[in-house]
Length: 249
Image (tube, rainbow, N blue to C red; front, side, top):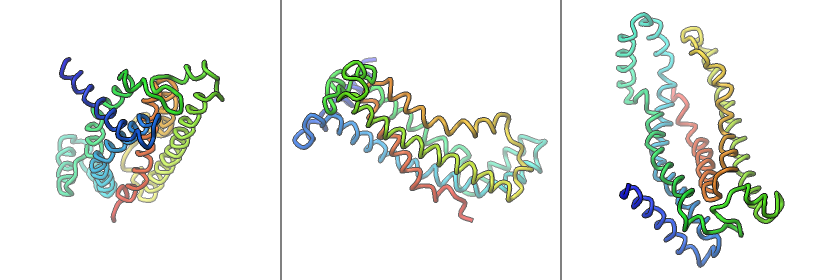
């Protein structure tokens, strides 16, 4: 418990030190800017993992027709199918779980930052344009309403998160439609039966991007700044890495 507390204290000290160095330029908004910069630095450090995951998706897309043939050939022998698929992936130097591993490695970092931006008293005592970083949207509504000074800060936050959510939703739907079209054109949909509930999941999964908007409405403003920064980064990063997700042949 003490080591965990020391770790969080160290992370908070790092953010506050950055805030102090930014104070001559950003003054009262220095801590909010420090939160955004810290989030961006963490995402930049994790970017190689995102690139590796994107490359893995591209290779798996290339191997999909061969995997369909293996399923057709070894469908009655799961163990043989597993070995054949493993050999196929190994031959291309990728893992079938390559896309999941980077996200799993990111989770502890995201947990630390989210914990920091929701619990540290010194951090949450700072402000952004007169709005406490430790306050919530409900507090802003009680102090001036939707169009009050604090309400407008949250309105700007929600506008950015909403725009990112809409863009992410549209991209997810477009990617799903392209994948379905590609499968239909190669006849792979006949070789690989859909998993139970896959169609419903494909319809509803893109809507999860709007969950961030709901979360930002109930967490402290500091955490909201973290959310808007990391979701915006994810959207831009995914767009830039999209070519790596396409089959090279």
